[in-house]
Length: 270
Ligand SMILES: NC(=O)C1=CN([C@@H]2O[C@H](COP(=O)(O)OP(=O)(O)OC[C@H]3O[C@@H](n4cnc5c(N)ncnc54)[C@H](OP(=O)(O)O)[C@@H]3O)[C@@H](O)[C@H]2O)C=CC1
Ligand SMILES: O=C(O)C1=N[C@H](C(=O)O)C[C@H](O)C1
Image (cartoon, rainbow, N blue to C red; front, top):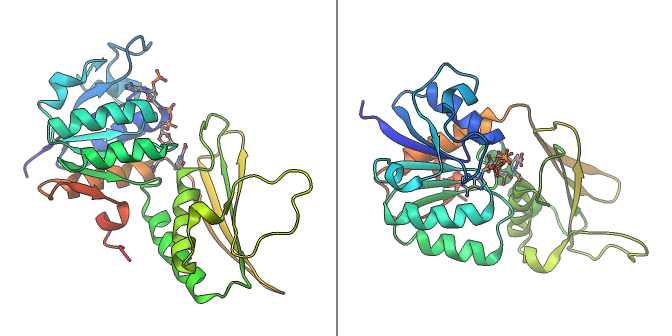
């Protein structure tokens, strides 16, 4: 089997270390590079050792160019500014760029779409099979139930998470909005505080909790008169996201340039 050469950017982070572990157990995948920003305390460390494995002989570096020249895929769970820079480099090198980074602005999304004109980009606020399957069920439920059912999305993550609502909550919000046939941007309610007045019909509400080491919990509540339906996902291990990302990178090899979602990778597109 031909091997696919991977670079992990943000290799010292929570997801970066998980990706290194998952790559080590994936047939046909080989880690050839690990990147952290200039000044990082883990530069020079072995990426395997950082991830709790025996040494892999891949030292963490801050110079992506020589690695991107030799790789076929880059796995990117970093921060928006870094992801935008890596999108340009990955497009130049025609690498499959798998983007898990959340908290991207509209202008970031435009830059990623521009990069995807030249190379394969797979981007999702959540790379797990379960979440992407659930998004389809949410779309279906929102379509089947009339506007007498109010849609509210709750999420909880660990205390280190820096963006809100989570990428997954937004993915679920988009699925619900598509099912309802409404525009998420126009209908989303991100904050409630003080005398808010009654809930607008067709609103899609978001509530964010942060604390401890919670990997990622999401619930979509469809609340009607006298009955409530709750669709939930509980992430117990970051490996679910990493396995999805590696699968996406392998799926993307040889595909036409474009911006793809996990639903494309998993054959779940609506
Ligand atoms: N789509 C999905 O399935 C999932 C998405 N995520 C998202 O992934 C992102 C990362 O999450 P997490 O791993 O928890 O966060 P961490 O903060 O643990 O990791 C981010 C890593 O990226 C590094 N980094 C920052 N800038 C650069 C740069 N210019 N070059 C290389 N590396 C850089 C950071 O280094 P330093 O600390 O030195 O700045 C850090 O090691 C978040 O946006 C999160 O929401 C997380 C899980 C699943
Ligand atoms: O930051 C995290 O940890 C996670 N981020 C993603 C998100 O924003 O939804 C995916 C997962 O929930 C973990």
